[in-house]
Image 1 (cartoon, one colour):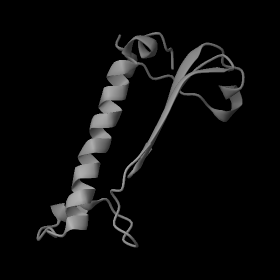
Image 2 (tube, rainbow, N blue to C red):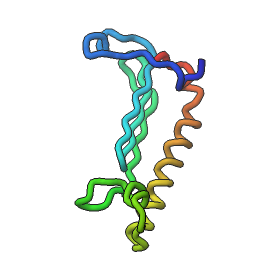
Image 3 (cartoon, rainbow, N blue to C red):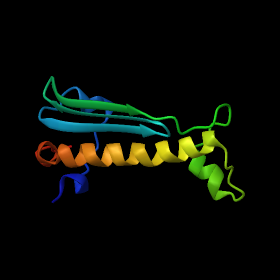
Image 4 (tube, rainbow, N blue to C red):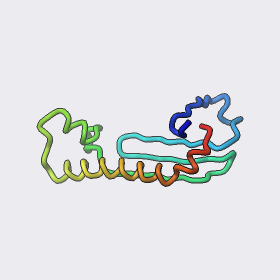
Length: 106
């Protein structure tokens, strides 16, 4: 199996008992965090932040664009660019970590 096809749920009850190599990823709008742990040690970690959410709107620029009549402002262009750049950053990081991730059981 590929590392991204394995899914083993970790619950609050068994998380502290788990031993081995695990990967944890958190992603929300303009933030990404990823880490690989082995037992109690951090092997790899990386975070990214890109300006993709419209101030006081709470949505990613791409969602606003999908509703039609996309804004053509410089701020909107910057948010579109950053949304793609964040995706590319995360994809490059996952490819770079591929060997380590292949050894993860969770």
